[in-house]
Length: 82
Image (cartoon, rainbow, N blue to C red; front, top):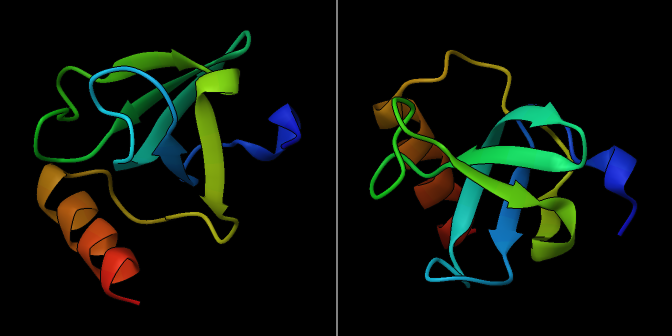
């Protein structure tokens, strides 16, 4: 994985921690870290900060809509079904 591919709106899979195996959306990227949310356990109000090495990019087509918990949950649900 190339770290420069992880950008705001990218769908990622958590590889480590309590949330490993869960799909998240990146809401911010700074200095080798990504702030991620899933709209359920990690909401927009309190994103989780993870190092790039603990994330795997699963969807290159980024989410470009408004970041709301409901919309993020719906997008992740659709991605999980496909």
